[in-house]
Image (cartoon, rainbow, N blue to C red; front, side, top):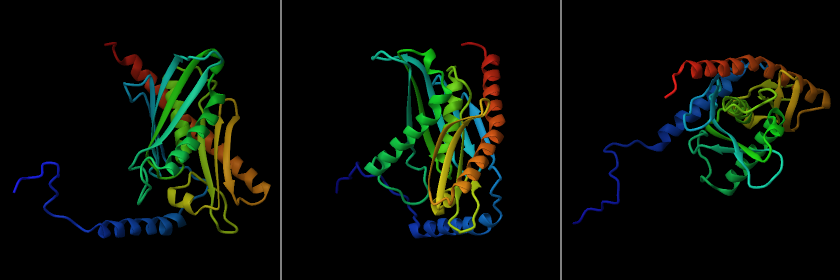
Length: 269
């Protein structure tokens, strides 16, 4: 009998998928239980940022949150545009096929493409006030964000990473845009919490993501929705988010400074 070389040989031993599904469910229950009880609503999750990772791009940045969110961004400097007019900022947001936990829709499905387009539009809205587009007439600036792992607060992390990548590319900016996400649990007397994890976002009654230019103390974007209570509660959420942006700002500045120092110490090839 002839062999079918188009087929790949499978492993000699295998295990039922239900075994791994049960383990994932147990991990999620642990997050809902003990982890949620010890969560301080005003506490920021650990933040790691590094600029200048990709040699193929003019600027790049990687941002990771303690909740597990990982975002990689690349930026390209001014390129000549076909149509006349002021400078334009083109933003792209994509999710890696392995970014989410558990089952997900078919890659490239209409719902997923629409969600990526909305995230790219929000990214552009947050970054445009930070970039000096008037210094780049008839030019295009491009930034691409890839969500490697979605542990919650993904859009806020993408805003910070994209701003770092643009600054690393040498693009003239008024300030770094810092993103911060908040959510309000469905409990009646629940308070807003900073940088929610993915299970907290999924169960939230209201969400809020804002971008701030800390040196100018200027808000560049506010995106939110849901049942967040009276206007006073939304104002409290804004104050909490602004404080979170200011607390993240030194970490992002230090990562940009370290990238510039590495570039200076590296001899030209």
